[in-house]
Image 1 (cartoon, rainbow, N blue to C red):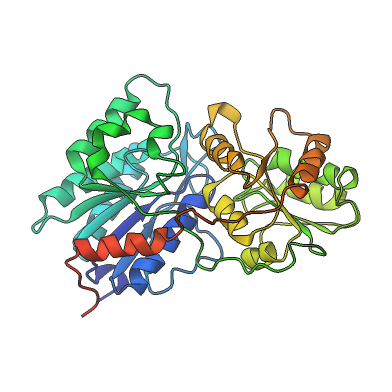
Image 2 (tube, rainbow, N blue to C red):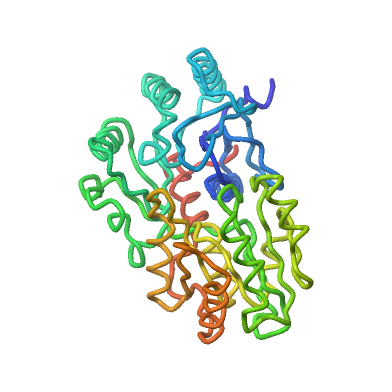
Length: 390
């Protein structure tokens, strides 16, 4: 019997299209579920990502799909060709066969139907197929703390109606006392009886704090890097203008940062600045850093706050994106980080942000629920009847 033919208690679907944040959070949840004794399969539909460690969970890669650019308007295959109907049908059938082989007790989709609506060509058939299965699995949604604001008429109605008709629960990976889901989607109150808050999901290993009081480097991180150009350029210019001009700076441009732009940044980096793609020891570096500069993605913000170092966040807000800006504003209001806007982002503005962040002592994550992965595993275990591996 192959890996994809072994039964599972939890089948967890995640589709990352641009960055890897969705995937990294899903990996942390899958690891925790597997550590709790649940046979867990993480099914990923995006491009293969480096340095993934699902622990005891099984990782199954579908034929990959990505978005052509940050507009998310066109889905393409690994070679950049727009998806046609035969491709979509083949991926749908691939997913249905996998469900039949795994026969899970819980089917969980990451973000859908509150996000990833582009994937409804395969997810709606999957969910309908699961609902017809006997015994029928519980159908859950795994959600981050903030949803993208939608202005397209009817989209919110579709999300809420689809959830109400097809799903049993949504597990919200956030703290309702800090940032309730209705802050970004007020009408989610209509399904409040099916929401379960888990607390925030931290990475597999929390950063080990150490050098935050001096001597460490400035660590600039951009997540996947697909939209990292402005931040990389501003970081190269900001060092000489900032209070940390004598400290070493490390810029992690991300695996999806365009190759030509990456080579240019490496060549133009001033003395004292190292430009790299990514680092598998990112959390260890963060724990020893003097200061963090990052975009405002869920995973990075959690890692930075756990490291208890001064933090500058440049939330991505192009093309109407609101998720990172909302999260950053809420945490900034609690004195946990300092925001620099990206409209426009300059070296001078980033340098001023560094000075402002250094003037405020870091406060960490005290008072914020951060057991999201373990609490999710507890909920999944209860839904499976309390049983793990036999």
